[in-house]
Each structure stands twice: as C-alpha cells, then as structure tokens.
Image (cartoon, rainbow over all chains, first blue to last red; front, side, top):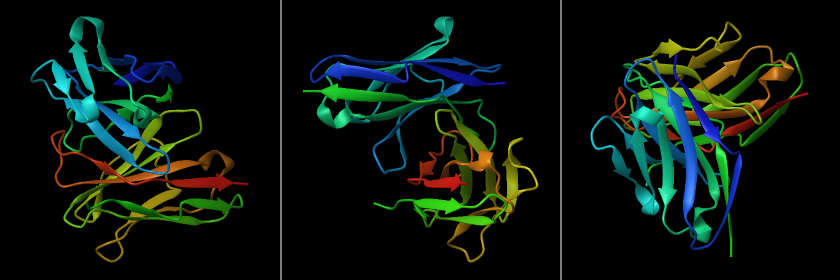
Length: 114
Length: 115
C-alpha cells in the first residue's frame, strides 16, 4: 500500500528565504508523485508532478522537486519565498492505477513573514 | 479559466440526517472523484466515477455513501445518515481522462459539520 509522510505541519520562512517542504513516500511499485497547493478558500491546485521521467521536476511559481529513490523522498523547494506563497501544500502519491487514486499527506502550512 | 465548483461551502447538520454535497465538474471532463479531509488528518480518497458508474472506491465509502450524476452537469455525494465522524472537508475533483497523466482539478471543498 502506498503512503505519504509530510514532516512538519507548519513551516515558517522569511520573504526571500529558501523554502523546503519535506515529503517521504512508500510504494510497492514505482510511484508517481505530486505536489498540490491550496490557497485559502480555493481548491487544490497542481504545482508539479513526477511520472518517471526527469528526477528534477519544475513546476509553477518557481517551485521544483527532486525525486530521490534511495531516500524515498520528493521534497519541494523554492529558492526565494514570496508572500504570495503562503498556503497549504500537499504531497501525494499514485501507483499509476487506471483511475489515478491519489494518496495524500497531511499537508504543510507555509507561513511567510516580511 | 474553467474550474470545479462546490456547494454549499459549509453545511451543518444533525446526526442521522441525510446530506447531499454538490459539485459541478469542468464541462469536458469525464472522470469524477470525491475526497475528504478530517480536521488534522490526511486527504483521503473516497470514490471515482466514470460513465455513470463507480470505477473505484475506498473502504471509507460504505453503504451510507452514494454518488450520482443526475443531470449531466452536477455530481453529487449523498450521505444517508450522518455520523459525528463524517465531519470533514469534502473535495470534489474531475479529470479529462483516466490515468496519472490526466491532472485532477479540485474544487474548493464543502466543510460538513455533524452535530
């Protein structure tokens, strides 16, 4: 069975600082991995996804994530945080079944201070 | 930009009552999903729906739950007799196709509170 662990329910950074949100997964087959973002009162929006091509994946809004099989990790990073990045971030895994069932982590709230 | 919409944004109900949560998926999408998130816990898959039938469902989706696409635009989740533990945020999603390459677009969610 697949599962996702996100370390830290809240992460605080200063504007301009590096953002690092951690995600570790377990999967019995090669996984597909996703990061979603949720802004207040909005739905989950796909930031980026890994589907067994390049291990470094670039997404929207300057975010990127690196798939590391040896560490079973898919951490999300952004070199320089912006106030508008404040949101909740969810890591998810799919084992590529026909209907793409997503298994999510608990989410990490990113707080950005001026 | 097309988006998935959900109504109501917040629903309060008494234990044992029936509730219907409504979703309008993106118009050309063919696959529909419901997820839920109990406060402080993970977002969990409930059910997927295609061609007017359930494609896949989780253990959570028991006989108390049902889904329907009554009119070609709405996609509903019904809980027949709500329990306190059904209190959660319910997310609807839709995708153009199946498989991991087809992005699921999520609605803003309905917060269900069962008293």
